[in-house]
Length: 346
Image (cartoon, rainbow, N blue to C red; front, side, top):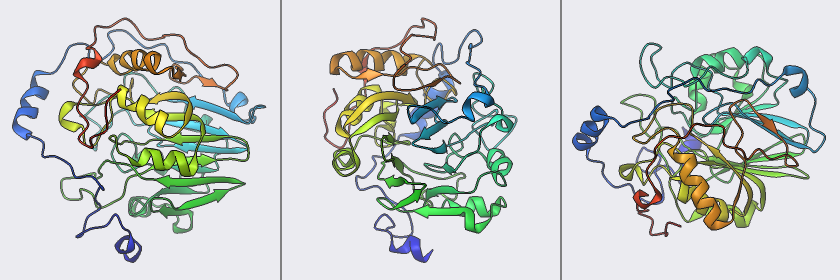
């Protein structure tokens, strides 16, 4: 708590965003959720890739390899260091095993098949990014768990050794085998119950190796500090950008695909890999809409995309760019939410 109280983000007993959030009309949003939308889930099984332990246990020759395991879970292999981002192996993104958003597909890789991991990195404590049982399974196998301020309390209560827990404020860093991990600003919120909203911090992450750099947005709305991140920590070979689970009523806490392209440009990204889509039904849009809108926005902005299927590994010399998802009706970018920060939408 002493460290938390010293944080510039801690104001009047809660973590806050530099830009204020607008109030969300609960009643009207509840009615929309009850009505639902068409094509919010796949109508046929998703053909996932099946990464092999024997292949992942060998470091990539190029020095950089990414494996997308669904939603915002990534295995990052960067200049000799393996980092597991926001690992969620749960069947549901929920505090309950019997209700809540259910996975569209089984995890492409068993936890027991993971190679040796140098660190687990957490962006914030929402259930689709921080899974209790996954952490319990990994707690004796991973030497380091790195997260924003306050999130360590969850890990301690789950039996993770205190010396393995590293909490960072925005712009603070930790080095692992020559790779620097930096917690970056984000515009979101936190909480795992009705009583702990914003009691822990949220963050994006920059990974700076001797030869390669990656940026992960975490969950965030558009905000001007993306330019600061790019200036201070970029350019990046690859960005992992949130593109899904957006809504006009959530414009102060989530980006849409068009804003993801803009943020990618602001941080000086090279290739964009979409995150936070295609795994859970978390918003009122069809399940393929985020990536379809992303394709349109990327073409307009001349941004190169990496489009791996769940479980697929790739290196920068072989970027997956083929559509693996079915053709599903989706709404065009004309319904993109207005960004309350005042920044324009591409």
